[in-house]
Amino acid sequence: MGAAALPSLLLGILFVSSFTISPSESKLTTDYYSKSCPQFEDTIREIVTSKQITSPTTAAGTLRLFFHDCMVEGCDASVLISSNAFNKAERDSDVNLSLPGDAFDLIVRAKTALELTCPGVVSCADILAHATRDLITMVGGPFYTVRLGRKDGLISQASRVDLPTVKSSVSEMITFFASKGFTVIEFVALMGGHTIGFSHCKEFAGRIYNYSKTSPIDPTLNAKYAEGLRKACANYETNPTMAAFNDVMTPGKFDNMYYQNLQRGLGLLQIDQILMADARTKPYVEMFAANQTAFFQSFSHAMEKLSVLSVKTGRKGEIRRRCDSFNNIRT
Ligand SMILES: *[C@@H]1O[C@H](CO)[C@@H](O)[C@H](O)[C@H]1NC(C)=O
Ligand SMILES: *[C@@H]1O[C@H](CO)[C@@H](O)[C@H](O)[C@H]1NC(C)=O
Ligand SMILES: *[C@@H]1O[C@H](CO)[C@@H](O)[C@H](O)[C@H]1NC(C)=O
Image 1 (cartoon, rainbow, N blue to C red):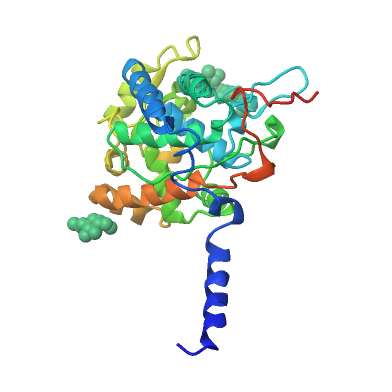
Image 2: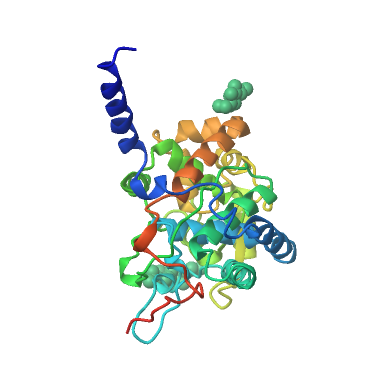
């Protein structure tokens, strides 16, 4: 190679990498705690395993919590902060959101254990990211790489939460995901997280009781399935905890059944079922329904991307002592 070629090649590499990786996420590494907290992986795995066995909805709840965390302020544990008299925190942005208690409990347990063995070393953001991956793998989903070294964020405000809802349109969803750097196929793959977990009846009641003037039931729903949901949710207004599995066929298993369900009118939420009706998303639903390997590959790739979204490193964050409050409580 000629001497003159070298600088331009280096420039080319720098140029390319500046577009693919942000300075913060480039500081993350897979072995971040190998010296400072060698127990990190084993501790999380043990706690995740016992929690998932005693509370089988933990995996879905933790995935949801992690998604919520990363999509607001980046993956920085901002979602774990509790509100106080002076600040309404992210997790209380919507009374209807009801973020899963099991998942918060899991993170608190892991943090407590890690503070005993490696005090002040492991961030809550890393615990949440790592626990999410372990849980997905535990319920049958793909293993993907989680790089570590996130700091915990210093902001958590309900007023800064701007997430799509179960009633969002495909266009709104595509725009939202694009604003966070995700393509349409990545968006459809992340929706596949609804292969586990459940939703409260009020989130889909409109589809089974009150759809339109001419039809109380959303006609895109499978008729028998809709009938079953109407029975299951009969008292939902007096009992708001009533819920249905997101994936009626294999509710606890992370697989591609979610997409097969959409093809049969078994999508629980409006936001699920409309993926099948839109020309931009339908091809990916069909591809993932036909090929679980393709789904797992796209899901893994999208999760690796989600896991490093706007992460904070260095002085842009802190290692919280407790996951639910900032180290210096600002008033
Ligand atoms: C909560 O749900 C109820 C009933 O579906 C709705 O009327 C209300 O606007 C929702 N609240 C928020 C903050 O979204
Ligand atoms: C259907 O909608 C009407 C009017 O909005 C409301 O009064 C009624 O309670 C709803 N029924 C159910 C079963 O949700
Ligand atoms: C399924 O998807 C994988 C990954 O994209 C691909 O390598 C494989 O050929 C596909 N299988 C079929 C039967 O299309």
